[in-house]
Image (cartoon, rainbow, N blue to C red; front, top):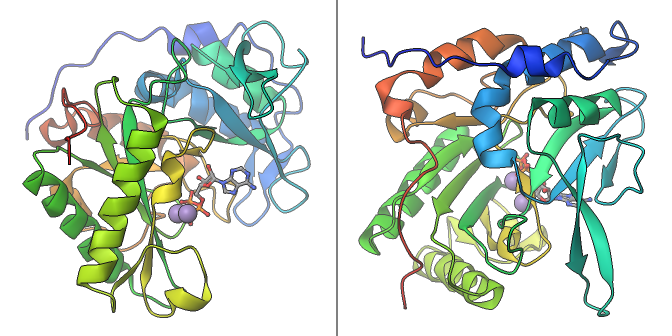
Length: 301
Ligand code: ATP
Ligand code: MN
Ligand code: MN
């Protein structure tokens, strides 16, 4: 098999700089994984996760009492996360600036876990210029009862339509019910242009195949269809980041997959935080080299 050589990683040592309290606290009651297990997962996965997570404004899903109790999205904080979780001021609609959170290293991820974070969601832009989006995300949300085979087919069709436009795209199992199709882009276009492209792309698909796709959020109009959630591409929106754990039963994770591998997947929760070793091993396979990276610009259409 094609294996790429292992890269030296200092993630685990770096992680030592953040102390995790209550390591034995059960966070995932159905399967028993603890806060310590979650911290170990993030320490191990950090080298794979940070290229997609570092220097992006994040929203955290925190569940301090475990995933079965109250969880909340957190975008702002005045400093309780400690020195490894950084702040970037972002102008709000009302003209004022608010500090958003970002991390840049393994201690940053672990400082969030220490504060009860399970999931990391991120902007489609980086902290050095939050007005310059650098990717598109098409979040495929199937109606309840739809087969995962239908979701896979939809993702592949989106890949093909994007390829028709000259765009390379990547698939990610959400760790929930769906698949995200991710299109890395050079910066240079506005949020308006990104959102407009994403909306028109989703609308074109739903117009061409109204029985399979919808581009409107309404659950009523989703019956038996897949909602192509293009709204992830608005300024201020987030989507779950590659390698993030999910606050769902069984501690699943959001996992980058090659288009070829996607064919063999039977659901979107194929891997969990207990699979860190497996995930790191498979990341060295040729098929996953360069996942999430492409030098390309938003087309002028
Ligand atoms: P699934 O495959 O099950 O749909 P998902 O991560 O795509 O998993 P969605 O419900 O489609 O989940 O949500 C898409 C994104 O919308 C989330 O990843 C998250 O970033 C954002 N989001 C959802 N709910 C909230 C919320 N309450 N506050 C902030 N952002 C949210
Ligand atoms: Mn989704
Ligand atoms: Mn969605």
